[in-house]
Image 1 (spheres, rainbow, N blue to C red):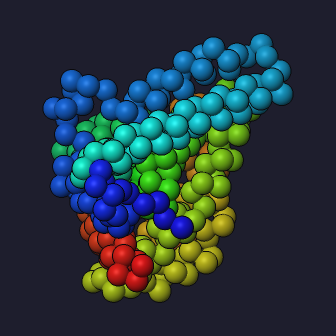
Image 2: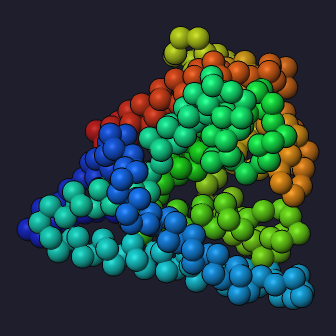
Length: 331
């Protein structure tokens, strides 16, 4: 069941039209740097709230049980706050003629399609200059220690980020927005942001962030699988990519990934490009001994492979738009 936008004159607007417009605005504009140089991005504001509660409640001297419950209550409070904000904004816009256009513009801020593309492209451009430039660029999109990465490690990290964040930053927000409107979109982004900041398996967040991490697993379960399937389908019909290998990698390896969701888009991307992705990764405070996605593929990814991944990313984005149009036609 989808939400329904209403303008002030009570004329119904198809919800997927609003979703398509929001997606189109993000594709066209992304996050204009001049705007967010002057005002904070809403996700950054929410991140500041998370950091505040983290500092106040997640203290080493507390027991593991106490830290878990404080983290759970923090997550529930902040997610509820985001949902109520979404309801309030959507209600206000419903009182304004053509308020759905403003709703689409607001929603576009929380879709990361163009921003992710630009960040991953910057890694390829950085590597074309030097390894140091590539490391600096990739440090903006992954949490692992860039100083431990050679050219192949930097390239794999960028490609993995493109795959995983296609799910987390694009497919997930769009699906939740399509189904539940701004409350659903804000819910999705709140959970994703909490998971990215406190949902880590280390001594600091193992207990405080456990509830947020599990909630994110549930919230992103369907979007991650849709993202993986979109990559498989577009790889099958594209030139220079391997749909069959992408699907085989998903079937064989997705469930082996440390993340119950990230394995789907990452395995699909790995198989489609003939690469081996994921595997052991070195973060600043710990090492993740993860399984390889498409183990028999090449591990020596390059800047050229980042370009191939971005080409597939764009096609998967087009596939997502086509899926929305198909559902709009059938609804």
